[in-house]
Length: 187
Image 1 (cartoon, rainbow, N blue to C red):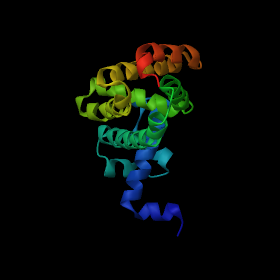
Image 2: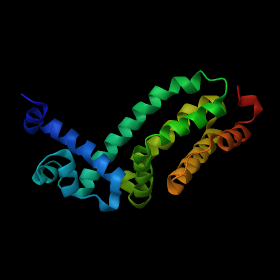
Image 3: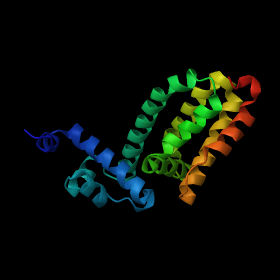
Image 4: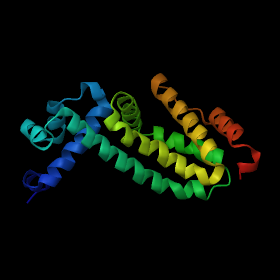
């Protein structure tokens, strides 16, 4: 039995395939242009499967955003040791931002989530997971207030790179992070 045959008979596999597909579609065209039809085509499933498992487009989008948030949480957990063990937090954070931007589609998806959460209170807990997750990673190094400011700077720098389509220059970013972290907290 092939993976496609198993997926055709497995409701959980179909849900997972649709959640993965909606992430790809959102990253490619944005939430506003995401449709059941585009997600079904990307997942290689019939259009009826999208509405069977996710009756509304909002349900489908929320499923994709939940999955993206879970993936992001796992990614943050993988990155935690590098931040915990570094002697140069500012450089490590600049490297983290650069590595996030290596997958611009995923990064765009995260910012799509932020914009959608600004409009839809039901999505806010998903967006807040990213903000609180990163803040929690930094809090032991710099305290809660400063961690929030660092996350805002990182988000702004990455959003700027996404909007301009240009690279993120780690030199000024590291300098700005060092200025915010301060010499006593910098390792």
